[in-house]
Image (tube, rainbow, N blue to C red; front, side, top):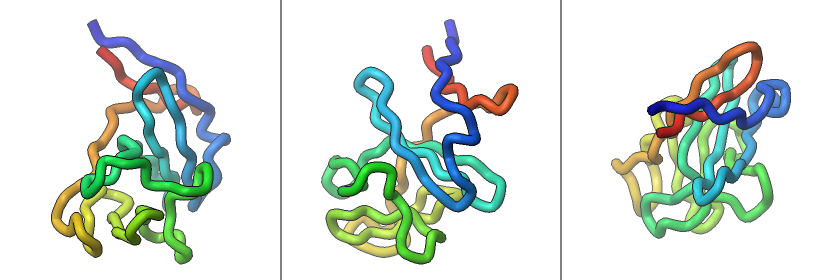
Length: 109
């Protein structure tokens, strides 16, 4: 049976910004960019470690790419595809979610 797990209000994530969350064992990152919201597991496909060194900072200095703080790999926000770095061609794992009444809800099993 599918469950909806409240994560946060969309207002908790600034436009052009990112935020990290943990739900049980699941570590994830959420980015709000150009009015669109994406959610991925907070795991670098290269080393399997969290992407950020500083809490909630997942974007490069231009705010247009997700960046791994460990080795600088760059990921396209909309697709999670790595376009630069040791994991080029691989992707971040998308996390299913839904938005309802300005709330971000994880879709769980």
